[in-house]
Amino acid sequence: MSLHRPPLWQIIKPHLAVFDGALSLIIFLIMSVGIVTLYSAGMNFPGRVEDQLRNILVAFIVMWIAANVSPQTLLRFAVPIYTIGVALLIAVAVFGIVKKGSRRWLNIGMVVQPSEIMKIAMPLMLAWYFQKREGMIRWPVFLIAGLLLAVPVGLIIRQPDLGTGVLVLAAGFYVIFFAGLSWKVLTGLVVAGAASLPVIWSVLHDYQRQRVMMLIDPTSDPLGKGFHIIQSTIAIGSGGITGKGWLMGTQTHLEFIPERTTDFIFSVYSEEFGLIGNMILLVLYLLLIGRGLMITANAPTLFTRLLGGAITMIFFTYAFVNMGMVSGILPVVGVPLPFMSYGGTALVTLGLGAGILMSIQRHRKLVQT
Image (cartoon, rainbow, N blue to C red; front, side, top):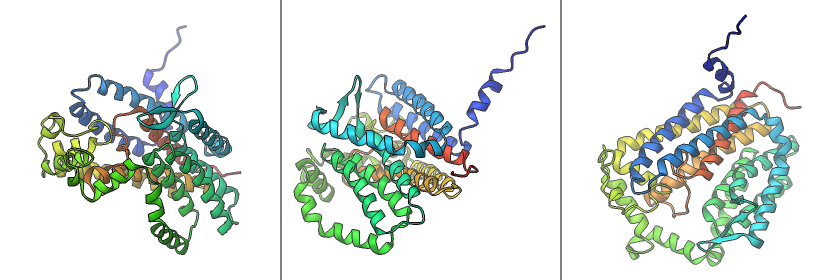
């Protein structure tokens, strides 16, 4: 008697069930927009689209693996992941690889950038910390949480890597805020931060100071430090309402836009698809954030609520900072546009975050023990 083999789709379908349908669809649509834009932006960079398609495949594999890991498992591994991440950051400071004046990489048989680990390890650690102290959260708890956040952020900024430092700081801050940080304390921190601006300015690297000055007046050095932001804003404005059309961006194809496949890909998109295209993209990002917040609201434990909320707001921070810097309202700090910019490391990190959100949604009916 011959055995009946089920169709391939019936074999694959149970494995795909771990993906949250709405979240996966939104991410797929943003990635599709990214590939279309990258094709135009990377015409002078052969192989970029093929490489990005491989990056997307890896990101979805990482997303699938993370979606299969229960929040309880993540809770158990939060401290080891954070500890390893901080240890690697210390190793980078001691004997890391220097590229373009920054010591950000470590050779451990393969070249890795440990600061990327902290984008997920930081909210994991703080969510674990507050979960263990649920019902006993007082100001000393917030103080220790601040110290746990300050150590890796300080090590990352020292490399120097202001962009990643800002993202890790934001990821940790969101957890602390969602854990119940009072508005009075938050206001005090804002005032203290404003008062310490002269000290912060004095310890910034020259290139970081120049980025701030170019934000204020990029025309003071139009062919040097201000070139990037001037050309980017020209591209965004020249797109008008409907854009110049796909593959028709003059700023893009005359190579005026710097880093047009990575940090400045939004400039390329804006020039070719205009205000209407920008509104569609903004709606997609709002749907992404909205779905993440819905998953967070339905999470069953403090750990999953804090983690889900922080990851969702990381997506917001990526998009807000990137669009702000290429539009000239924020300093250029090297933050990619989520799920659109070319690059494997950031895409995999974002895929990991999305997978954790899917895990929280999938296991929402389970009770923490």
